[in-house]
Image (cartoon, rainbow, N blue to C red; front, top):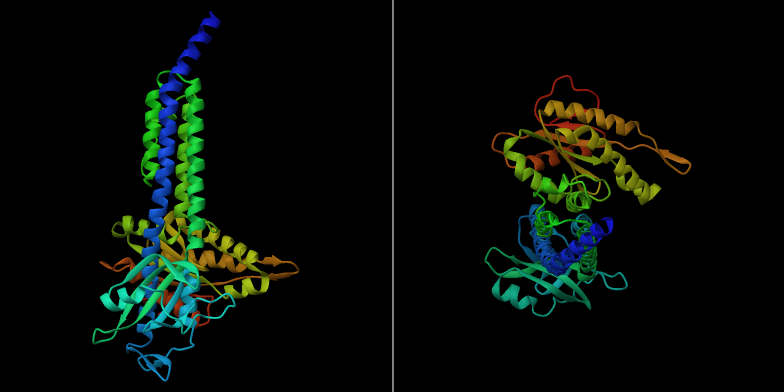
Length: 434
């Protein structure tokens, strides 16, 4: 009798393998091919958006410095009456903040740039790549390319015309990134997708080998879930019909959920601090901004460059992770905490400005009390915070910029303090109001 049951089970397995494994294999191949295409297409699209933002931001920064036109006098580049030749602070800071190279052209010549040759010399007074000037100067349009050749190095590049008041194009603002660095990230993502697809295929084949005819329905649920996941939809839920099973199919469903969580974490979280990244923060804000009366804080670790310089970047990472963990434990249940760039943090608090200040006083106190050890040396760090509250009808960018202005006020006013807008009575030590 037992022998007959074994033979029957084998028969079902072979049938399921024929009708199940081959379609799943084809699905995996299709998902792999699709993921490679979508990742590369998505990367090109994201690079265009990112570089466009950097190129426009470069122009906006110089416009904020001086509202006049770009002009050349005695081979010196001016913005209005402000001489900007050789003052590389703006473009170097922008490169450090974004990781992208930037250039200011006057005519078709690079006048200020972060791009250097193999000897480390800036590529100033060199011409624009062939074909760019015809588009930007001739058509007066922005130009994006995924294959710009700069001194033999392929770049993603975005060019924005610089127009004077009379409408003549006198130069270009450029933002670019070497293709090799982008393609390396794309390669890792594609390999990860391939590994995930192979894992799912092998796991599905194993479950099919042990299952009964009801597996077909469960596999259909899993396939649909993975299809949404491959398309970047993280809102779908795994069917309870799969998760409630008492066999390997339930494991497969749980693994797929873990893959979803891992991918969501990879896309939404800063890898070092595990805080929300900018992309995830903006999604969060878009979904909740109108429903909550957010108080916003911009925070910055004081003298963080000195930590890296004096104790090394590994210790700098330890400081970032500690500060991030403290901010997350204190504030994430009441809003969100994001790493906004470098040692800067953005905090959204669903509550009053006064309550947020209380939380910030508590967490900055713990941060000040922490003693870090680097060999035979010890040190502590402090933070400066700018805090504001959303007024009715205000957009997120407006409130965030106000908090950033208050942060700057604290940084220039001595650091190690919380700067709050509005009126505040009985101000404790380390807390000032604007």
